[in-house]
Image (cartoon, rainbow, N blue to C red; front, side):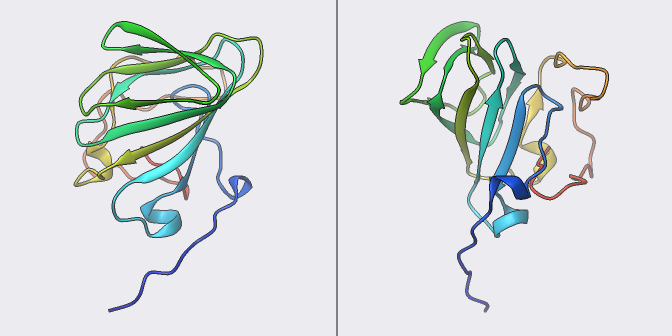
Length: 154
C-alpha cells in the first residue's frame, strides 16, 4: 500500500471556475491532492457577484470569510457574514452567496464527506447569472459527467 504524501497546491495552479458565478478555485481535492474525505478551496467574488443557489446531498460545507462582506441565503433565510466569521451549512440545505460590499470578498470553503460520485455532490437549484463568455452547468448533472480541468469539481 502506497503511503499518502503531503501536497502543496498554489492558487495559481488552479483555473477559475466561473460557471456558478464568482471565481471558484478548488485547491485541495481528490484530483489535485489525493484527498479522500473532502475538498477545500477559495471563492472570490467581486462587488455585486454571487454564487448561484445549490445544495450538497452528501456533504456539510464549512466556510470562512477572509475578506469582504457576504450575504448567504440558507433555505430562504438571509444571514450576513463578514471577514473573520465562519459558517457551517448542513447537508441538503440550499444556499447562495452574494458579495454585498464595495470590495472583493474571499471565502475559504471545505466540504466533507465526499459524495459517492463527483456528479452527485452538487445540485444546482437555479441558473447562475452569466456573462457572454461563460456557459452554465446543467441544473441536474448528467451521469458520468467529469471535470475537464484539474481542480474543478462539478
